[in-house]
Amino acid sequence: MPSSIRIFKARFTWLQILTHIGAWLPGIYLAAAYYTDNLTINPIQALTQRLGYTALVLLVLSLVCTPANTFFGWRQALKLRRPLGIYAFLYASTHFLVFTGLDYGFDFDILVQENLDKPYILIGAIALLILLALAVTSFQWWMKRLGKRWKQLHRLIYPAALLVLLHFAWSQKGDLLRLQGEVLQPVIFSLIVGVLLLVRIPIIRRQISRLRSALPRPPSKSQEKKQTWDPHKSRAGS
Image: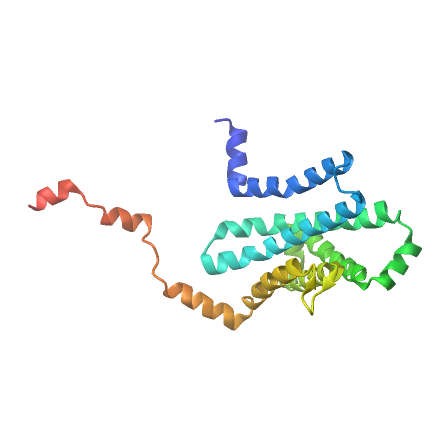
């Protein structure tokens, strides 16, 4: 096997590779659909909405990574947290650029009026600024430079997620309080993020960890080898 392939495999697991491919696929599909006129009657609106939806999905998946490791011992999930967050930011940025550029031609007078008429646009912009700060400081250099403050800064991912949810729910055609109209997806995403926030509360996290530690664990490979029946030993004993 060539050394370059061995180095590549050492740096990236198959799960990481599949995550990168999966994150790129929606963007490739949307770009192809837009340039081949296969995005509904209103292609710019469809492109804006689908980019934003993809950003939301990737953001929620990035929030799942830490609980997956904490409660299920799935350490591989931690390696996916940063790329998923970066991709969420990239899709959110493209969502914003398509909205302000393609839809409104960077006409800031109209955009200001739209913000007054539709406050969820301003909420989305605030969420994007938080995601920008988190994406820029996600590199090792910033971790060393900020020290303990790095963790404090990156806890802003949770209020950012709540703002993104509010932006998404408010932009839908429906009444969330009365559960009328297009509210199913905002409700589902809100429940998922709500659970992820609950398990971050220290007392709840400790209780779940205790329950997990109390569960019987499967035997390790070394234990399985010890328990494996050896016919030669059994004959010698007889």
